[in-house]
Length: 94
Image 1 (tube, rainbow, N blue to C red):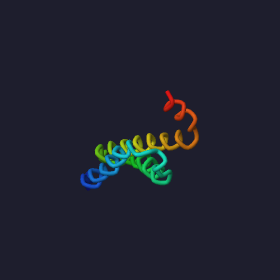
Image 2: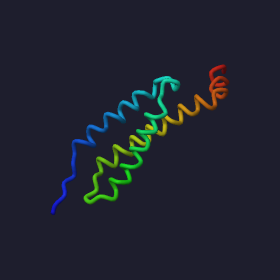
Image 3: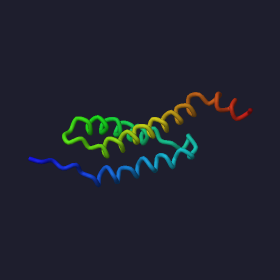
Image 4: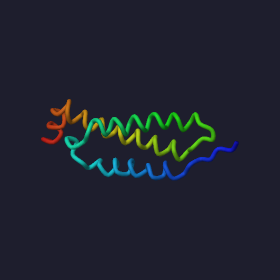
């Protein structure tokens, strides 16, 4: 039985990563922990899955690595803003 690598679902999933990159300019206080955790965890879980299935789906792997990366970056911005605000205030005052 020959298995097919599905193309469209991972291709449309790039829209989530592109939207997350567009949100890099959004103020950190407007970012959502649940949303960014969902994007990050989805990216990590599906990246792993795309490497254990046969045949390997490299489009699925790459989009999910991008999702995990953008989600982690957004989470780091949110955490930095919420828990380390004095460092930002010092940097803005210079």
